[in-house]
Length: 240
Image (cartoon, rainbow, N blue to C red; front, top):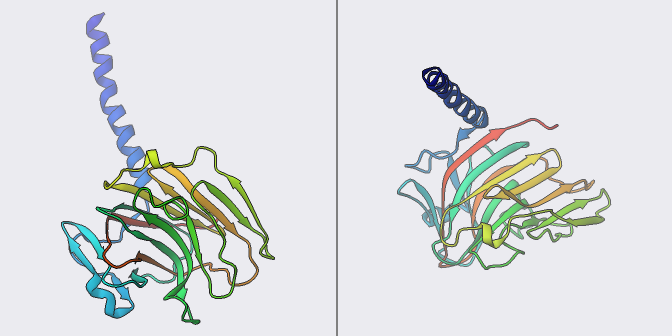
C-alpha cells in the first residue's frame, strides 16, 4: 500500500511542475522585452540633448538629473494605444520620476509632452506623487488622482472620485529597493499597480483633449536625482 502511495505522489510531481510552468507561460504570453540590458537601442532622449542623463549600468537603465527640467527616455514605438507595461524601479536616494504614457508633443511648449503620467518617487514623497496619476494637459484641467484614488472624468470634465479598496500603501513598498510596476491602458480606463496592488486608476471620458494613443517615456524630474529601471516589458492588447 505504501509503495502505491509513493508512486502516486511521484506521478503527480511532473504534472504539478507542468501546471506551474504552463501558468507562467500563459502569464508571459504576448510580452516583449523593451530593453536588451546592454544598450539604449530602441529608445531616444527628449529633448535630444538630454541623452547624457541616461546610461546603462549592470543591466539597468539609469537616469541622472543634470538640471531641473523634465527629460524623458522614450520608447521608439510612439503610437501605442492599449497595452500592459511592466517594469522594476529603484530610487537609491530621493527623487521624482515616473512613466509617461500616451505621450504626444506639447505644442504649447509648457512641457515636452502632454498625456498621462504614472508618478514614482522615493518612499515618503507623498501620495500625490508615489503611486498617483498625473495629468499633463495644455488646456484641460489637470485633475488630482492621488494614490488610493479611483477617478472618473465625464465628457464635460466633471469628476467623480472614490477610494480604492485595499490599495498599495507605503508598507507595501521597498525603501531604496526594487519595486515592480504594472501600467494598464485599456480603452479609456487606466490602472497603475505597484508590487501587485492597485495604486490608482482613472477613466477619461472627456470629449476634448483626450489621448487615446502615443508614446511611453521614462522621466527624470529633478537635478541630482538618480532612478533605475530594469526588466521592462510590454504587451499590446485590444480594448474590451
